[in-house]
Image (cartoon, rainbow, N blue to C red; front, side, top):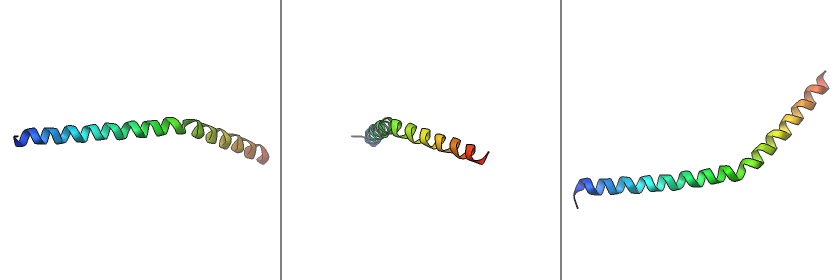
Length: 55
């Protein structure tokens, strides 16, 4: 094997691993999305009530 060929294979291997990692991160974010939306919704309601108390 030539040095260039080995370098290209190494780079392709790293790109595959990076794609796998980004897919895993994307799946985690998709799974957490309802939790994040719910948390922000609760915080929004709490902030709204707090501001109403200040009036």
